[in-house]
Length: 611
Image (cartoon, rainbow, N blue to C red):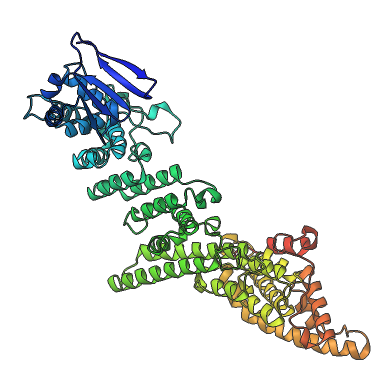
């Protein structure tokens, strides 16, 4: 029996396929747009369904049969027809599902003929396809166009089980080919040829499988991942990496592409599916950066509330790992701010709730023991303090940001989480610059967030010359700079030969001398008030008071000049000017080196242990 001869009928615009034989064909079977001119006898010997259809055609004196909704179309029927004629049929991962569904449709079972097509395809699937990693993935991809046949025949389920089982294999035992493009090296690929362990230059990574299954559609991908997780042998970190790779593969980069009408529904479904697949491991499996980016996309595509809530809960578990850039999530209508500050506030509240709950459990379980986890918790809070200050510095540029939002977010972290107030000072300075219409009370309120005692020398020098700060704040800065200078001078005087001891005990010396310095500065202030009255009365200051002059010598020269200027200006314009500004600098990053050279360098050499 010779192969088919294929021609095209131009009148009917249909393909016609003939079997080359000395016998004249006696039946025409139409599948889709293709007519097959065949013989009845070979078909009757293999297909139970064709037996019934041919019997009905004989009763109606018809020589043509129409097969509607034939699974796999003309190509799949051609495979079955060739098998009926005894021809060699080539099966592979791309056509085996279609052939299996077509054979099922034609009822080519063992009841009709021993060793029929269904039996042989099942042997091929079991012995070859499901044993191969990549063939299992290819077959699973082809099943979608053959639903519901492929589902009813359990081909989909068996492919998923095959894939999930292989992902759980010990990486040391993997000898099949897989894709791993994240390392640009051919040495990472283990080919299908037999390789001895000594020839493997690098071990197979745990996440070797995540790129290959990225080619699956979202519904099949979801089923594979659920099966992988259900086996309980896959690490949460690997699950998180797989979800990240899939999201990068299918989610578009641009906002316009995300929210376009053509892809909005698909992107929404994709995000919601990824969220439901997140590992339940207290947020360990996925990085905070990835979760925040996923949350940003979920908001843009308007994912359901449950998905966004689950994402926020996972982010709250590891909020301390976030970066300022990741938190800059655009605000949505009806908010008028540039970034969604309320969302960040909610994330911070979730994080604080988790920290409080974990601390309560630790105290209950380990009342008398030192707990490393509690120390780590405090360290994470320090990171959160830096994160919040950095975020405040970014959102302070927004002219629509309300003072209450700024203050509430600033006060959301505990006091010990902000040992240094330089970041907060920078954010306050930016806010004052971008909101020049603030009232005195509002400026006083926002500056009240800052503790000038926790500013570094550089920040203090800048604040002392910052014209946007209220005068009272500048005076406080100069006051504590005097305390710090006096403390450093006393420390150096007590132990000039022991620099190591000076470094260790500098903070204690500062605290010890603070009370004395405070009393000293109070006395100086009283003397200055007296001299100020004499100045207005006599036209000049009385220079006979050595105590006040000697006290003022504790300040660096630059700060002392500023302090004198502020005192005279403040007294000359009245007490109602206590909240006005003084200085010449614009921002923490715009300090002019020449303006603070003498005072800054002096304090740097004298300051040993104050941080």
